[in-house]
Amino acid sequence: MEIKKEWPNQLRWLFTLRLKTFTPWYLFTNESEFQFAADAFEKEDPSGKKLLVFARRQDMEDFAGIEVSEKGFGESVIYFHPSFRKTGQNNTIIKYEVSVA
Image (cartoon, rainbow, N blue to C red; front, side, top):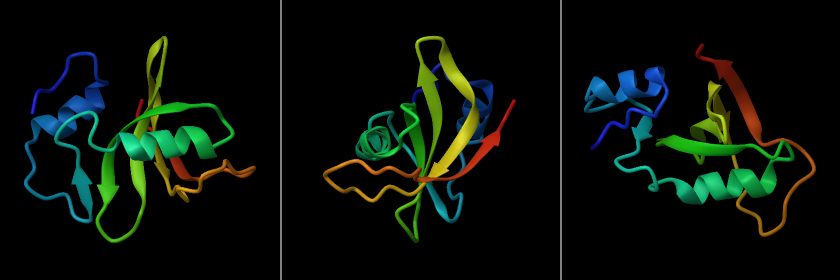
């Protein structure tokens, strides 16, 4: 997998390790692999944030992503659980948000 220079250093570092396992997480093998989860986040979370989703938990429908904006990448990893409903919700789907700066 190509490690892109525009990714945040923390994400590049994670993929530079070339981990075979990161139990209980699956890491993406291309940027669009978890796009369906990023789309669900954008639809369901009222914050209006857009994410690059880079990991999925093996044992549940939880995902981890980094905020993407016109200014670049944010400084937090967002851990979330989408419902994948057709309509949005009024509450947040974010379980945790951790600064990596």
